[in-house]
Image (tube, rainbow, N blue to C red):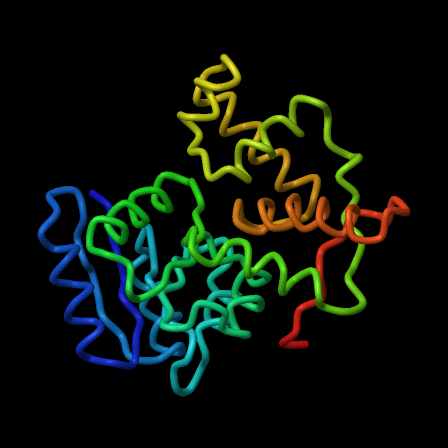
Length: 226
């Protein structure tokens, strides 16, 4: 059973999300909260598998709450804005996924399942725009993809295409456990918290390299939240 906590300051949104998820036999909503501070407290107490987190909430925003929950639970960002400036901070904070609130019910359900089993995702409709926005940020810090082995680079490429551990295993002819281990090593070597961060780093690095033609180092952009 996947245990989910819903954090959103709009009661109607919470009710809609709960209604969608409670109809699934493998998902249980263990709590609802209306601000970031309450989300952190509830997550520490209830230990859900996934927290569905809004970004703009009172008392403590979703980015700060996500950062505080690193290592405690996985966070799926659910926001109204398809290029919200706060999303960048959320990804830096370690959010495992990012969806728009206009996603259909099946997409939300699948997102919860993916995040719960250790896979990450980002809404396909905003992926390219997010990467482009990252590429425009100034003073990025260096993250060298050269530390990865050829096999780990293959795995990272699969992660970038949104593939789950099972799909990576099939594509690269390895066990799912081995695929999961490779993903963990990639994140560890790059100092990242989530597959979403890794995917954006990888694609963004390629864009920066193509952008100046001088072999600039592969980098991860600065957090616009400071």
